[in-house]
Length: 110
Image (tube, rainbow, N blue to C red; front, top):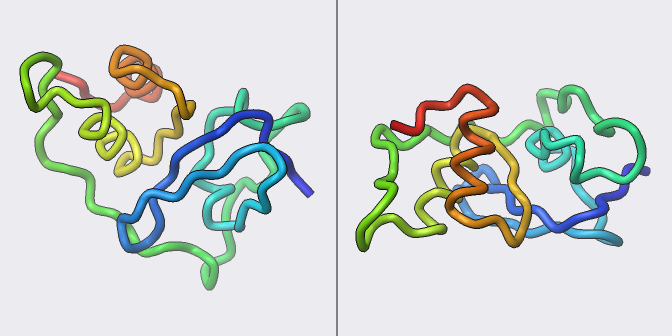
């Protein structure tokens, strides 16, 4: 069984944030969404693709990139944007960390 070495946030098929960490049983649909290899204990991700029956419904990515400054430039807004683009980030990630992860994944941040 694959095990996490850090805490991560992923969004389920209803857009509800789910948090998984070391010692938790991570369902197959969530394993597929946790793409950061540094989140997993061991050398690689446990699942390359989830079976169709276990796959969550597509979450439509927000059409607008969250602002980088101002009152709407919240970590939660960036977490939602990252989750919609299936980019996993660490539990304690800052807005700057999330934006860097999105940039590394090739997701627009401007």
